[in-house]
Length: 284
Ligand SMILES: [Zn+2]
Image 1: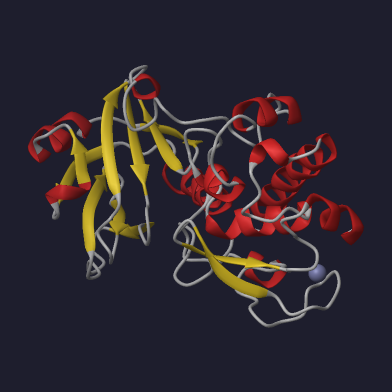
Image 2 (image 1 turned 180 degrees about the horizontal axis):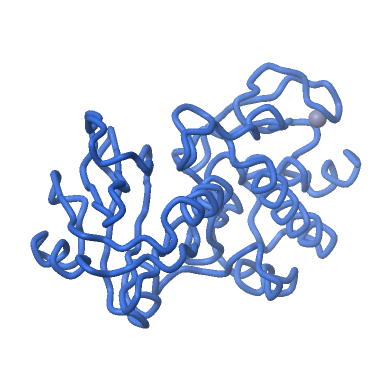
């Protein structure tokens, strides 16, 4: 599933490809992708004649900003966008096609069909589902270690599921949570109330650096991720623990251990990330 860095990469690529283009018509082949408005004809009619101005991001959602409208798009597992000449044959699993006046199409393809699109009048989208309950943006300047701590400290859940919950902090998925917890030397099953100030600081820094580094590298390309121009991301070559079961820990060489936390496959070094505070400190 694309996480913040992948969506950010798609966003940056999409701007280059579609900003300034005017939509002539929209073809919806799979109505259930369109979550708002209820009728797909309304969706298509509302977009016709509007020009894409820019593309923004909130968490893992793309916000395609048009004159007077905002199209909120979530790629979920395998959704991807591509721009093609309109006379090029349409690939299988293409569910929504935005036909531009300049003879090109923006095509949304989604083999798993889990992706969603919501259309709003400008100014509405951040106040309504699915964006209204999203938590803090970890790459924005107002994300601080104090804010992270105050949001999570009193929650009665293990730290990994908390970091995955988009209502607290957005953009982190299974890959980057494992990477950030490893960098911070925090076991994913620690309770947030057990974290010491130094550990909050390490976690904060690890989240920022993991995501910023991945954005710079163009997002990961685990499994099927491809950006808007069909370019694969490169970050998978730089992952420290995710997907590295039985490979040596980059820090201490002990084999990376894989187990399940909150239903999600989880990668740790059991020497560098321990459940006991004392062990944690000794591991430094
Ligand atoms: Zn280790």
